[in-house]
Amino acid sequence: MRVTDSMRYNAALEARLHADQRVYDTSRTASSGLRVEKPSDDPAAYATSVRLDGRVSSLDARSKDMGRASGDLGIAESTLTAAGDVMMRAKDIATWMASDTVDATTRAQTANEVDQLRQSLIGLANTRGGQGYLFAGTKTDTPPFDPTGAFVGNDSQQNVEIADGVVVAANASGAQAFTAAAGGRDVLKDLQDFADALRANDVVGIRSAIDTTETGRRQIVDVRSASGVTLERLQSATDVTSAAVTKLTESKAAQVEADPVTAYSDLVNAQTSYERNLAVTKQLISMSSQQG
View 1: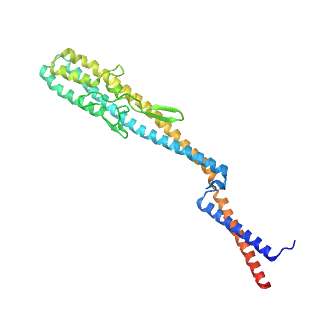
View 2 (view 1 turned 90 degrees about the vertical axis):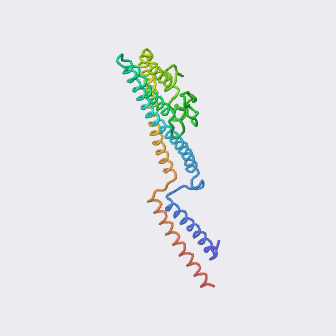
View 3 (view 1 turned 90 degrees about the horizontal axis):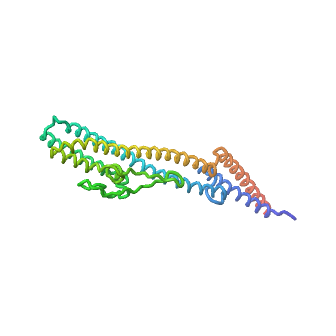
């Protein structure tokens, strides 16, 4: 078959268009740093990157949930430490007031300090965190203790996922720390009874307060310790999740990112090829003009 000038010209034009597209593609890769941006670039790699994106998004959300829970547990832990100190002070007062050398007037006056300790404890029990009242269970939008010291919250758990299918209760129990709900002491009632005994010069009641305040302090400390253990677990899980996100991000990069040296080399080669094809096309046009 005779190859005509027209056929040569069309072939050169097609080659130039191909070279032009290659320049565009390699320029985009070199400038964006991405080898795969759409399914047609590499269907398998694109599908893998989409799957990895979904996993990273899920882990990021989990990490944020754990971060919020950790922040509130940290506040709860320090609040319970302060609450334990209040009960320790109450025990010290009870030990002092139980002495036979203390008169009724001093005891009645000291009852005012116990009242203040009780109000301080109510304030601590009604501490707010980033997600609401810390010791209210799941009723986080309402103070768990009313002005009289009555518990109006619940002992429900706020669960947080720390791994696939693994959840932990990430809130400190106000019911267990401050009330008799779990078979412990109603510490606010105990303080009220202590203050009443002081005003009544009830030595038996005052001496009883030594034990009740210590028992109340211990149950607060127990909840604080449990919160500390959970906080450490959340922080460890957060570290593991962060490492997993980093690994997945690196895996995605390996799928879709271009090697900088290779991308630049491909761009140079594409530009060279384009310039060569452009020169050939110009030559064919010139020859065609001369023949015409």
